[in-house]
Image (cartoon, rainbow, N blue to C red; front, side):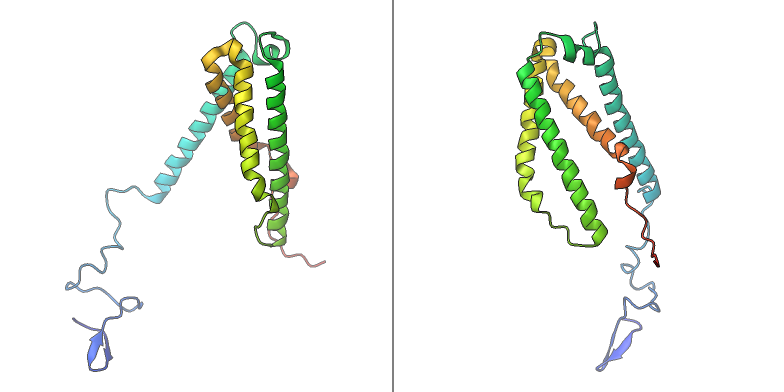
Length: 190
C-alpha cells in the first residue's frame, strides 16, 4: 500500500479525505465515480419521463373526450345518461353517491394535509383508518356504473368507466383552486 496516515506502526489509507487521490496501483477507488458511456444522463431521462407522462395524460383525456362526445354514435354521453331508458337508474345513482362520498373524503383529507403541512405538525391523520372503507366504496361504485351502463355498451362498459375514471384522475391536479396551492415560505415581520 502506498501513502496514508501512520497508525500504530503501519499506514492506514484515507479513502474519504479530500486530499486522497487514486494512484495507478488501486483501480477500484475511482471506478464508481466514472459515468458509464452507455447510460443516458439524468437530464435526458427526466425529459423522456416527462414526455411519456404528458403523452399518457393526453391519451386519457382524448379517450374521455371521445367517449363523452360520441356516446353510442347516435347521441353524446351526457344525453344518453339523461334520457336513455336502457340505463339502470338505481345502480347509476348509487354509484354517483359513492363517487360523491369519495370526493368529499378526499377533499377533507387534502384540506387536513394542507393544514398540517402548513403548521409544521406531524403527518398523522385520524382518517387513515377509513381508507380501506373508501377504497371499497370506490370499487363498488365502479362496478355499479359498469352494471348500469351494461345494457348500452355490454363488455365495453368496463373500459369506458375505467377511461373516464383515469381521465378524472389526470385532470384533478390541474383543477386545484388557488387557495389550496402552497404558499411560498416567506418570513414576515408584522
